[in-house]
Image (cartoon, rainbow, N blue to C red):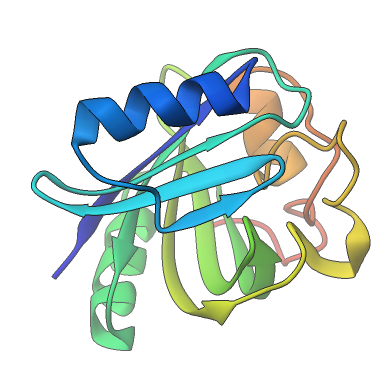
Length: 163
């Protein structure tokens, strides 16, 4: 079963954790000094917030899947979307090990599709995303399309481009 993913950049993590804990009537499933996540079943959403130096507001949206078959299905849809796709297999982002693909919609809203394989002790791979100013996990090509270069993750040319 797929789950909607929403990631919001916030100014004050503690204040935002209190707000969303009250709103969702649930404690976060992950809390780090710069990040928190709720895995909610009602509504079925992976809702994450972070304080990593990015402008506040919706950072990106996504679809989280639970199986390789669902990931293949969603990847197929992205390939037919007539937009550049950036692949990130076996990546570390948001304290998780995942296989991902990124795409920006026609308005520039960044979307990720991903399957998480387990937790990570760091925000991103090779420490590149551990810096406070590395605000997002979006590859530069997708970040540039959505709101300006983020400076993290591989570029489309590093991953063989899109579809």
